[in-house]
Length: 180
Image 1 (cartoon, rainbow, N blue to C red):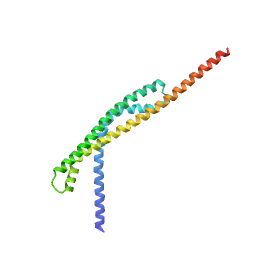
Image 2: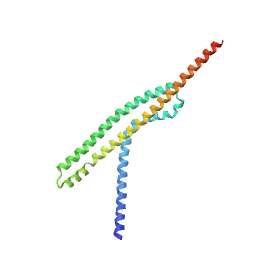
Image 3: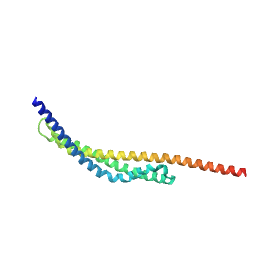
Image 4: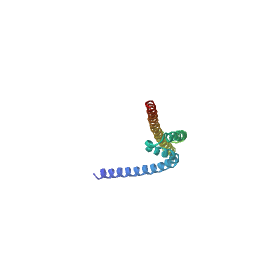
């Protein structure tokens, strides 16, 4: 009975150790991803915050917003393309390292594979890092596109209301003149 308990304690300790190691790796990669991506997101976050005031924006402010958002989205898409390229390069380098180590290692096939897997982990982490950064860009671009669509829709409605009000005012003035 004590060996079962010892085994359970061992497994629990291994789990806690693995969980702590995962947390440390995550924290490090998350910090790097944030440092890399955050400077690119300042402008789009500012623009996205403006959308909260869409109901009080003038048509001119809406047009200005749409122009700025278009420029910012294009910039982010360009950077995101470069990040995707880095992600793909890191993935290729990881696979290349794995293959190189597996081919040049001594021993049985499974031992070679295990050693190659172990040796290619840094490249795998870099690939994961860029995959995470790429997803951060995708999220910001999607949020920016939603903000763009929101302001564009509000602008169409506001423009329609203003035109209708202008037409009604002109009709009213025309009716007034006819009645004179």
